[in-house]
Image 1 (cartoon, rainbow, N blue to C red):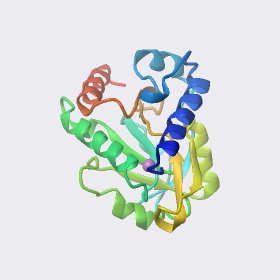
Image 2 (cartoon, helix red, strand yellow; image 1 turned 120 degrees about the vertical axis):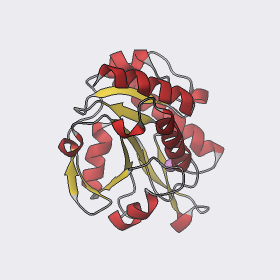
Image 3 (cartoon, rainbow, N blue to C red; image 1 turned 45 degrees about the horizontal axis):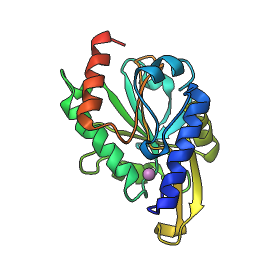
Length: 211
Ligand code: NI
C-alpha cells in the first residue's frame, strides 16, 4: 500500500467495511483497524476461506487441499509493498517463534494481490526475507485466480497509481492475518494492532484444541 496517510486510512476503512459485511461486526474503529478475537471467531466461522487454485513460489500449482493437515496463517499483500506487508509478515514470524510447542505446527502463507509483478521467481526471493516466518509459502497466479482467492477470503486489494512507488503503482490492501484450521476452516483473525506476543498466546490456545 501507499505510505500516504490518505491511503492508509482508506485501507483501514476498506478493511473495516469488508470485514463488517462478511463477519457481521456491528461497529469498527478506523483508527484501530478491525476488531479481532472471540466475537469474530464466532461470527465469521463459515464465511472466510474456501477453494482456491494458485501457484506456489516453486512454480507448482496448489489448491487449498494441499494445505490440509496443518493450521494455516494466511496473509494477502504484495512483494513491492514498502512497509505494511513486511511489518505484518515479521510480526507473524515473531509470533510463530514464540508459540508454545513449536511454530512448525502452523503453515505460514503469503498470497499476492499483485499478479503482474509477483511471479513465482519473485516470491521465491521474497519469502526468505529477514524476519519472515520460517517455511513461508508464497502464492501467486493469474489475475482471475487471485481475484477468486481474494473473494474467498473477503480481501480487499486494489491497484492504485502512486508516483512514489516502484513502477508507479502500488496496492491498497487488507492488512490482516487469518488463522485457518487444519481443514481450512476459519478460526481467528489478527489485525495490525495485535502484538506478536498476543498473537502467539492465541495461537498456543488454538494449538491445544487440535484443530
Ligand atoms: Ni502491503
